[in-house]
Image (cartoon, rainbow over all chains, first blue to last red):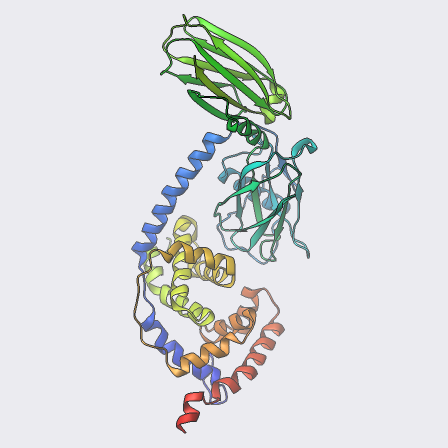
Length: 321
Length: 163
C-alpha cells in the first residue's frame, strides 16, 4: 500500500475510500455468472446454427501472411510483444470459424486475417467481387475479433453513407444489418486500435451480394404464389415439398452470380429440366409440370457448375396452377 | 491443480470492483464491468484456471472494458434489464471531492492513480500493464498529485458557508 503521509492528501482520500467502498459493493455472485454464461452459450449456439444453414457459396479473400498454422490461445491475456504473422493469421482463421466458415470454404463478401501492428493501425479495403457494383438491399455485416484486448473499427463506406461497427477483440460476434439504398461500390475498411494491432485476428462477412440480387427478384410481385425460397449455390441443392403431390405446377428459378446451373423439377415420373446461366443480373427460367403429374413430393434439384459453386445464389418461386 | 472459480470470484470481486468504482465514479457500472470480466473468465476457465495468477486475467479484461467507452456501453446494455433499483446513502463530501478530483484527470493518468493507490501496484507494474515507460507513470503520478492536492484540500462550498 502506498505510504500514508500528511503530505499526500490523495493517499488519505484513497485510504478512506478503500475502507468504505467495499461495504457498498453489491456482489451478484458466482451463480449469477454461471447463469449469464449459460444463457449466452445457448443464444450463441442458436446463432451459429442459423449461420451454418445459410452458408452456401465460395470465393472469399484472406489477407495477411501464412496459412494459419501458428497456434495461439485467443482467450489468453495478450503480452506486450506482437504475435508472429502465423499466430495472427491463426487467430483470423479461428475468427472465421466462429462465423461458420473455413479458409478452404469462402465466398464473396468475406475477409479474415491479422490485425497488423503498425503506427497507423491496420487498414484493408474490400470492394464487390469482379468490380461489379453491389446491389441495393439489406446486408448483414458480421464480424468477430480474437486476441483478448483492443478493438477494431469496421467501416462500411457506401455511396449513400458510412457506418462504423466497433468490434471488441474478445470473441463477441458483432452482427449488424446495413441497408444499401443505391447500387454502387462498397468499401470495407478495418482499423485496429493500438491494443489490437499486432495482437489480434479478425474475420468479417457480408451477405453474399448475389443473394441480395435474387432476393430483389423475389420482392417483385408476380402474382399469388405457393412457396418461395433462396440461398447460395455452394453445393447441389435439393428442395422437397411433400405438400405438393399433384400438378399442374409452375416454378420460376432465378440465378445470380457466374457460371451456370441445371434445374430439374420433378413429381413422380413427371419432370422438367432447364439450363440456366448465372450472370451479374439475375436470370430466370420457368419449369412446368402438367395436371396429370402425381407423386409423394415435389422435388427441385439444382446442380451448379464449378464456377457457380464459387459465388452464385439462387431463388425459386412456386405457383399452383 | 487449477484454481477454483467460485473461490477466485469471492476473493476478488469486491477489490476489482472497488478499483473500477474509483476510476469510473459509478458503482453500478463498476459492478457490471467486473461481473462481465468474470463471465468471460468462466467461459475460458479450463485454460485460465491453470494460470499462476488467474485474477490478473480478470483484472486486465475488467480494465479493458472500463477504459473503452464502446465496450462499457455493451456491458451496460447486457446488464441493464437485470438491474434492480437500489437505495444507497448519499456519498460523503470526501467521496464527492475525490471523484470530482479524479474526473479532472485524463483517462490514463486516472487509471495509473487508481492502480497505484487502490491496487497497490508499483510504478513498474503499472508501466507494464499500461504499456508505457516507468518515466511516464512517474510523471502521471506526480502531476496528478500536484493537481489533486489543491482540490482535495480545498474546503467545499458548504463548508465555506458554515465557516
